Length: 189
Length: 189
Image (cartoon, rainbow over all chains, first blue to last red; front, side, top):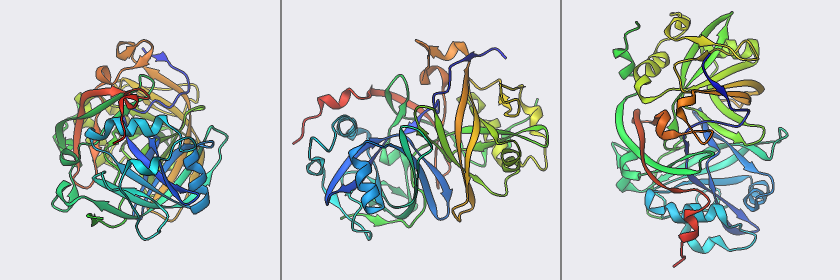
């Protein structure tokens, strides 16, 4: 094994860049979020890590709902900004046009091409800095112009990804191949 | 709200492309995995969704350990291949040079630039097709040539991302900006 050991940090590269939304004391609040992944296909579920002391966390505990909002590349600065400034100090509800879906308590960002409205299934405390929050997707909302054949199209949405530890945002690169398909061309040596 | 509703699928774009490793009845097995995200920084934790009926799942339940292996773009075909073929039908331990870390039961892929060795913290059944498995990172192993200032460098590792529902692999694109930094240039309208 010709490798160097780097300790027990979570080294998953890259991760998605989204904005997490929740109502805190009746007002919309948003934060940048990268610690999130899909955990079930049907019904759609996601798991995320959210710091116990974040302002947004209070709203998720209060309403048991939240939103995941996908920013485009041209929203880079505001996305990073909502990750820097706490809702305790600044009213971030003014930064976006906010809309609500059927839960009525998960604020969503109109300017994002795609929004997921979610309800909380579990809030786990496994001893870390973050709560591990598992949510079920209630509804997705997409701007019609980013769809191709009824599905969100990465090349039209222009989402971003993030690289941990060196703290760098990247765009999406070249198309490489089709899933559950290009592997059929593989030939074992 | 000028958006179309797309139902309750997990629409998070894009997600990482890794290979999940586990020993099943003493033999290394691997599958393609995209349903994974970071859920805690220190100690590093990840959550993933793994189909209850996958062969790899048996090994995770058996040993309470697994590995996350990050393939480079040039491993696209074999990565997609291990997602198509079940370990029940084919011995996938022969596809790679396999090494083990301190848990002795989480097989890792030498050819991948980065590997995470993990132990299971929780296996949750929330009623979906997938188990939601939360793991703690025991150790990361990196090829020295992909490091910059001691951290894995996305531009040297060349990882891939995946877009759900249209089933497309993409590479990593242009560098866009620095995290917890570029947001300071944001000026609210």
